[in-house]
Amino acid sequence: MGRAKKVVLAYSGGVDTSVCIPYLMHEWGVEEVIALAADLGQGDELEPVREKALKSGASESLVADVKESFVKDYAFAAIQANALYENRYPLGTALARPLIAKILVETAQKYNADAIAHGCTGKGNDQVRFDVSCAALNPNLKILAPAREWGMSREETIAYGERYGIPTPVKKSSPYSIDKNLLGRSIEAGVLEDPAAEPPEEIYQMTKAIADTPDQPEYIEIGFQQGIPITLNGVAKTPVDLIEQLNQIAGNHGIGRIDMIENRLVGIKSREIYESPAMMVLIQAHRDLESLTLTADVSHYKRGIEETYTQLVYNGLWYSPLKAALDGFIQKTQERVSGTVRVKLFKGNATLVGRWSDNSLYTPDLATYGAEDKFDHKAAEGFIYVWGLPTRIWAQHTR
Image (cartoon, rainbow, N blue to C red; front, side, top):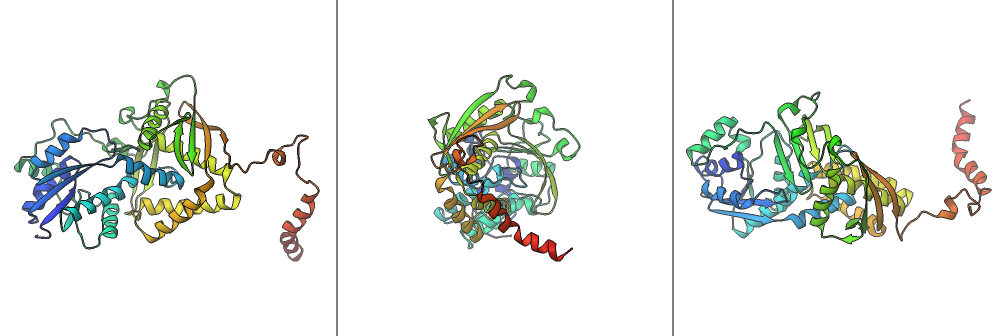
């Protein structure tokens, strides 16, 4: 199956992507495989990963540190959009895929490759995100997905790799499928495939069990500038530092666990467990600051935009005309979303307890019920008459 001569492979160091290297060469006639690992803050030592690709037969093995771009260009954009898929999942894995696709395409162009490849199976969302994103960025590149076509069980895949010098995993494979990056962890499979089964505590790494969290609340203050978080407790932070520190602080209080039945793009329901402390706190805080700084009509209209935006990102359409158009709307709304939000962290809950902004639309002498009240109460009667007139007329004609 000679489909391509030179291929850039999205490489993680796991069994499937390692086996992809000899499989592409020996089964599909690829002459050269360039492995590309993305450093998304997953915390793994990537030098052994880079070396493993070479031992597996890659002609070159590259590691791209894209942590800063991941946060600035993807995570912060999602925070501005208050992006929660099905109102729960902050898209930690989904946001990484268009960035990986971008560096795959850039690397393919740099090395004059004629195809890119990934190790996704045919059941998940990631295959769609990679394929569609790469096609949007360079429709002339071929997209190869060996694991979607080879039809091998895990045991057969390991045995195939051994034939070409890829070592068997040293320890017994975990029953869980885990994806990890700076924004959080997603855990599925094993006992989690039973929707009625409570997740075992062992699956969590970023968040403490409630019983182990501090017995005193912790207050933090998050500063935003035009919808982007820039300070933590009054101290300016780089994008990566802010996410890392907030993950640790909020996770210490057991905040950021999500257990949901998720509707995948491919039409099946999947039981997913997520840990995403920083993103959950930041989206809550950002939405709260918007309530102080946006007019009611903009705030209400933006909710529908957010839903569409989130679905586009989840469904792999980051590089699409509609997503670009929504970006324009969202950026316009963020011009005045600057200020600070105070959050109380305690026993698994992030509670918004205060917010202030130079752009606040909250007017104390109109909101107060005290002596300082400047609201014209006499104006209310005429307003109510005009506002309720269509309902009054309807009622008169339906009696």
